[in-house]
Amino acid sequence: MSTLSEMPVSADAPVIKPWFVYLVRAANGSLYCGISDDPVRRFATHQSGKGARFFLSSPAVALVYTEACRDKSEALRQERLIKKLKKSAKECLVASAPRIPL
Image 1 (cartoon, rainbow, N blue to C red):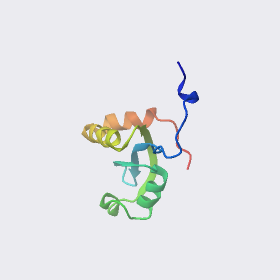
Image 2 (image 1 turned 135 degrees about the horizontal axis):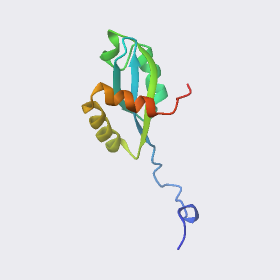
Image 3 (image 1 turned 45 degrees about the horizontal axis):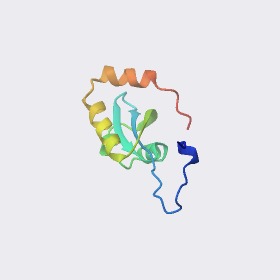
Image 4 (image 1 turned 120 degrees about the horizontal axis):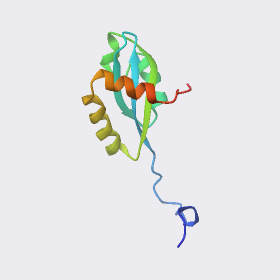
């Protein structure tokens, strides 16, 4: 039996890019949940005032949580679950996350 690292990879095999669910803290303390294949770039978009109307009233100040997902559909499912959480539970996610270097 061969391991995954020993298996040949076809040059035309699709590259699976991970997706992420993320939380961004706004200046007023609220948390915004979204998905992206590049959460750092998406955060920069939010900081520039584009990408979500959510940040029109209170600017994005910090990317406080990211979670890698297998694919976009898993990221969407995880986003839906996180959005259903109470703010206190979202704050627990943020507190348990390693610091994100920007």
